[in-house]
Image 1 (cartoon, helix red, strand yellow):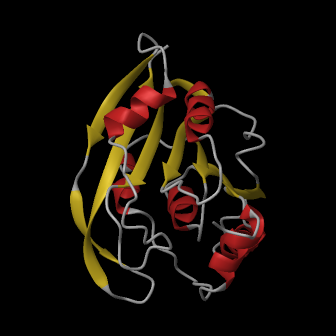
Image 2: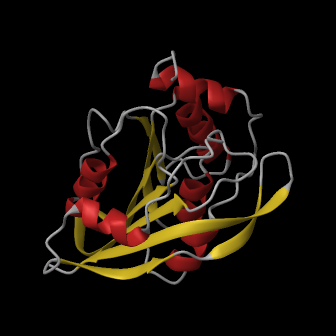
Amino acid sequence: MHTTDAVTFWDDVHASRPATTGPRPNVRLTEIVTGLPPGDALDLGCGNGGDALWLAGQGWHVTAVDISTVAVERLTALAASGDLADRVTAVRCDLGESFPAGEFDLICAHYLHTPFDLDRATVLRSAAHALRTGGRLLVVDHGSTAPWSWNQDPDVRFPSPQEVAEDIGLDWTKWTIERAEAPRRIATGPNGHTAEVIDHVLLIRRTV
């Protein structure tokens, strides 16, 4: 049980890690999005900003949200220093209280896990409804615990992509599942150590 609030917790997580000038995008993002025509993207839980900066570099206009003020301020500074300020808008947002306004061609939720109460199904359902026709929702969850993860609970359970899709509860005559799989990869942690991890990948496209 955490005695701090969610904002303080995530601010402390980010503040405890040195700011980086070149955060890496997530592998599944670059793998899936490369080749798609750029448009408007929404990054839910942008963290260190690697995904938002990579998308902006590919021509996307990105709204990046995070509950942590530290994360948002760092991303804003990185976008400005990389001449991407016109393509990246970083906003502090508690997804448990509100969802960003707008319509998007791509919405990403990479490792949107938290030790605090968050109705993820509602957040992801809101994301699916915020897609334009033809837009995609990419949800990438942990399928295993990395040695550097903040959550080392040995009893943690990782819902499958199919279970996540079921929880979102969409009308599948209007959305379609393009990918639902659990690939493995070698990941590198903040300290430079590597380990094999499992990703749970769910890609949903709005068809109507």
